[in-house]
Image 1: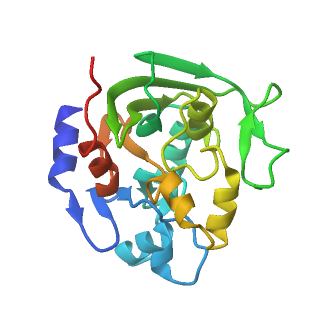
Image 2 (image 1 turned 90 degrees about the vertical axis):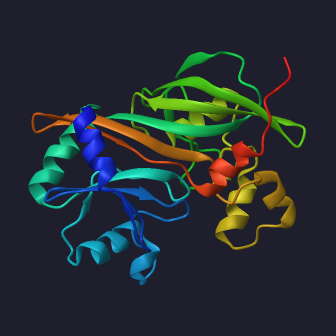
Length: 256
């Protein structure tokens, strides 16, 4: 695994489309920028990750193996053939790909390590069509988190978490952390006032909304992927956005 990781790191490049973490004949791994949708919503090829992938490859063969929310940055696997896509897709379905995220949440998380076991389903009480919630009749969902760092900024407390989703439900990490009382910084849907999200999609966010969100994009980053494929161990890592890192850098450790 170590040799594979080192080779991947050596091939890392940055272009005006995305950061390339690894590329070979079968697989492309990129660090998706925050604020970029995975699938097209506009005609501009650069407006979506798959559009940028096709520009990078020069053809339409790239297939996203995993997907991230628009505002979530981090690692995305892209298969260069149907065969590779099928094989990697089966690993995702079997939860054979270990995923680790970095998340900055509101508040000082008391426990060093914890697991959230709460079923998820559609939030029928919300006017936001894509919003889910914890509900007893939902699909089984499990998230494990551990504290990486606690810090304060402008008099408020925050915690950097390393999070591993053990299942793959929509918005799972965001919902679970909010359910635990520690919503992700900048989360417009699960941060406590879904009306901010509605104003965001209409292009009507106020200065008060922006101040409450603190960051332009929510502070969730897909930092690591590990899996075994074609008799090899693969491990990839990507650094968070500058905005994410600067937010932590300007924070201070809490007084004991």
